[in-house]
Image (cartoon, chains in turn green, yellow):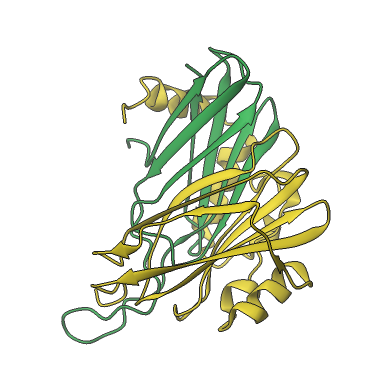
Length: 103
Length: 168
């Protein structure tokens, strides 16, 4: 299965800028469907970015993050060609992990 | 945004190696209600998900549950959000700050049913700047709380929403 995570990490030499886009419904649990029934909550709770075995960014999310979430951040260091590991877990226990090369 | 070419092969490689993290992931999927704390190898650095803070109905309760402190308004926290959002389901909001020693940045929407939207941990070496896309039920204040040097700072910006993000 193709990964749900698309990540782009670009090194400028001093810092690495990271943009990630994840496919996920991010249901808050407050929305009703066409029949008027509540759609149960289903959202990513934690998203972690690791570089060199250490977390460089950890996102704790609620249902208030938009569908197919996007996040952008930057960290000091990070060499071209190195791996950046990205993983998420949602409130139902589902998860995904991918590794991207810093460009 | 371009797709990383090696995304798929990297995933496959991980699975082939039977990496511990992947094994845990499978375990986690099999037991849907596994408490989050039981998967520390997967959740980096033992950072627990702040369950209580994400249940809070007011910004004061959410901030208290997250940090146990009250923030002071600071003009060093710059929030970039649209004046008017046509679609409350996707509101791009970003923040930067010139404050030193930032350890955490959180986003709250005062009129949402759950006010806390996101809380980001900023380890040393990571820039105190985050961009994301949030849902807004209606016109509301967006509050960004920054934890820096053990103190809390906040900035507030009102975003007018013409179509709410919770109507489906």
